[in-house]
Image (cartoon, rainbow, N blue to C red; front, top):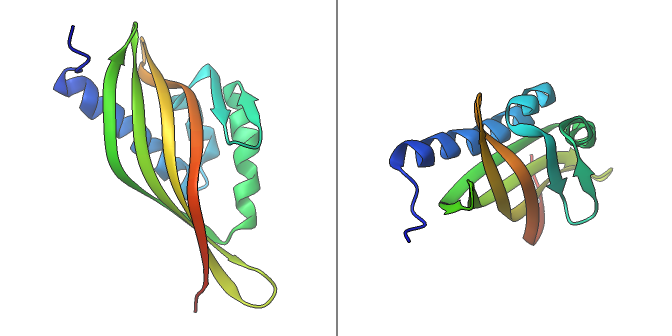
Length: 140
């Protein structure tokens, strides 16, 4: 049996993961209610947040940065049971100040996602962040 998804579903899922990145970078964390299921789970590697309200609360920590920029790379979406699974590459820039000057902390990530289709459309049921590596540089 093919694990391939119809093109429309792949486009909808690509849009969903982009909406996550845009919501984070725009600091519109409430928009995550239209990205995660109500019971959605976010595993950052440090902690697991269960429920979209807990995910939104966790994202508040990003306010310590002057700005973030999540750049999405390759994306693979496959049929998985009644829903779908995804692997999404991301390079996430975090502009801040370490006390000695402005820095860009760059996190190279892979998102391991499970998606479900609700009446409202596709939503993230769970997202696990795999931190591949980080670099930090001084910026002007």
